[in-house]
Image 1 (cartoon, rainbow, N blue to C red):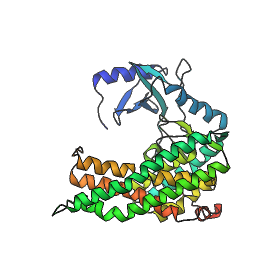
Image 2: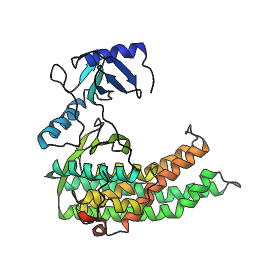
Image 3: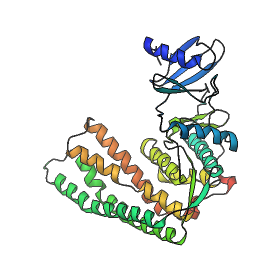
Image 4: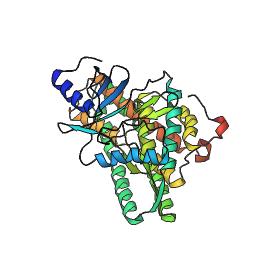
Length: 345
């Protein structure tokens, strides 16, 4: 929190004026989020990263929320000209209610978020046929690149083992190696399963996807709200789930077992079919972020300290462990009766 520089104050005042009032008080929360008070009520003003190319898709989120009664999408206020946003000096601003965020533990937040995004995915789901030849070609190319990583990883291990004293990062890579071999083998298997399912059924489900789903983009009041829809897309729900689960595995120290138990909060409302389940596992087993960290270390491109680089590698490794663990679990074991799901709101 802090003061707002003078030139930004003028921009904010101009943006707020679009909503029919002058700000009585402005508080900087982040470089893009401001708490605005009109003398009686607080509002959240966001200086977004939306562009001319993305604004229409973002607007459609709120049209869908109104039409389909998606009450867990935090609403935005309308300007005096009946717009969902206002534009000031090439930047798009939008305003929402200032909503108090209840203090919940991470497990409660995860349960609430999974239930909420599941409802949004289910209510907005549309099924279409896809060109299976094009999809299979894309995944065949991806599998070829993944298979090449087996030799690449072994080369890295041999390179590091040549050092008389390995750095902590290098030792970590060598320790992870045998798990990564299993990850690559399982990934290849999951791609096979996915393409076999696609061959049998060429339908594809599209849902409203947040595109950047993290716990930091949720508010937990009387019920959960999902905010910051600036990277919205219409895609398969597995893409949204993968982003969320990857973040939880990397940064919130949630074990695969804990996440498997909490997954029922999602699957009770919107169950992934077999093709989508294999797609989710492919995303979780994707090794390229892990490999990129090694490449940056070898090329000395990282600006981070050794300790930070170690943490980043370990976080990426956790994601792969999650994918490997979930691949060993029958999908039916991941679905619980509604009575067994937590209801921590």
